[in-house]
Amino acid sequence: MGLAASQARLLTITARKADCEFQSMSLSHQKIALSRDMERISDEYHDAMNKTKLVYDYYGTGTSQMNLNYALLMTPSVYNDYFPKFLTDRQNRVVLSPEYAAAAKAAGIPHEGYNGVPSSEIRNAFVESLRDNGIITSATAVNIESIPYNNEIGLGSLYSAQQATMDVTYDDLLNLIKANCPDTMDYGLSFHVNYADREPQAQDGDPRWLLSRAADTPGQEENFELCVNEEGNRATVVSLYDLLTSNNEYLIYAETGKGANLPIGEAAFMQKFIIGESEYEPSVLNWLVDSFSKILGGVQENDLALQYAYNQIYDLFVPSATMENVANRLIADHYGTMDEDDIEDYTADNFDSFSDALDELGTKVGDSHRAKTWQVIDGAKELIGIVYNGNNRAHSTNAGNRKDIAVDLNTIVDVFFTAYKEYLEGIENSNYSYEEGQKLSEASLYKPKGSDVFKILAPTDVNSGEEDLVASFYDSMFNIICTNGWTENENIGNAEYMQELLKSGSVFISSIDNDAYYYQSSYSTDTYISEIADTEAIAQAEAKYNAQKARIESKENTIDMKMKNLDTEISSLTTEYDTMKNVINKSIEKSFKRYDA
Image 1 (cartoon, rainbow, N blue to C red):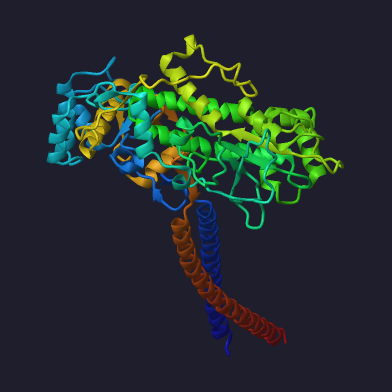
Image 2: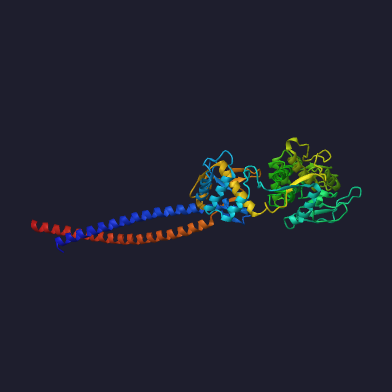
């Protein structure tokens, strides 16, 4: 090859090599960009794995979870108990969607609200605008306007202003309770005969028969026993009517004996059986509230009085948060890994002594080494609250040591009814007294007479139907918008957007409380709202991540192949470049030698 041709080829090789190196550098930059994309989608995927959503769980069982959205909160239904649950901002103004905001504007409600509530004409204008904006139907609007405007509901009142009440005597009340209230069996408080061969010793020949609550754990016995009938008739059911009218004594009784069934553990079980672990669990107190509410409920002062009575019984049997925590721990481990010494040590860690813990749960009666069952039973009939036989240690080596424990159901009902009357008659001027451990002979309890008068809802269809509930719903909505003011958010109807506002603390939940007023709080404290993993969003994010990852990996593989080919070509060009350069150098050297000669 001539010198000129070699130089031309060298230039060609140089140009191609430079082009290949440029392409390789470009592909390298593309690969870096893909790495950044991969890092981005990995971060998005990681964030999505922690994604949660808010659900509305009305029954609190985890089986009825609905995605939380604006319509669920602002549409009358059983899920919000026919009271709106508002989204409110930091100024406690109600956050309205464009449709609800249009109704507020049409009614002339200022953003800052009123100093009070306006007239029924403005309320009707609000209702008509709800109809015009498609929130309610024309028929619903007509029904709402046909019911007089209640300017107190949501502002201290829970019920329609048109609800009629009537007075009944105590005798009438007893008949209503007898006909309508569930007995313990119907309510789910299960009693059954247990330890039939271990009847308690009778005093003065007076027989006392025992029944016991079914064990929660198969194979284990909690030994809750109910002394039912002085005539010796065994039964498994008690009615509220029986407790209010019978001369018989109804006692929950437990003979703990020796071993693992310790008095402190049985007292903890007794406490939970009476109080319950939640408002939905069958318990003596929940049964009392639900039974009385079935007859007396629906009248605002009655509902508030029943809540007060609930609190008084609760405080009698749960004297402190420390005792509640100890009782919960003892129940959890009663049939678990804690032995007698463990229980004694654990209790002592929370109280000055073991006897202090027992004394806080109940009242000591009898002598620990000589006590007879009848002493504990009579103690329960004479004292308010749980009584036990006086054993102030977790266990004892004395073979004759007994550890009986009991509480009188009649007394619980009497104290509950007394607290109910106390609230109605005025707590500040109350002459009633009922304390844990107080002798009944020294307590001052309500003694009902047949002529005593009680207020109940009148039997009418006007206020019990859904139409009235819907009217009350929109009246309470109107009242709160008028008193708190309002602000519009055009995106609040988007469930995901709304939930993010709640999670970030930009908006809050305002719900009606037992006192019939609305209070603002975080969604995390609302008993109906739960935050759970958003499995659907996580699955979508995983699918998206896998698809994007596959595309990026495919592009990376293509780039790697191209870069490998370019590297091979560059290597080949480099070799050829060096060869041509060597040829040219030798040709030049040869020419110089020729002319030198």
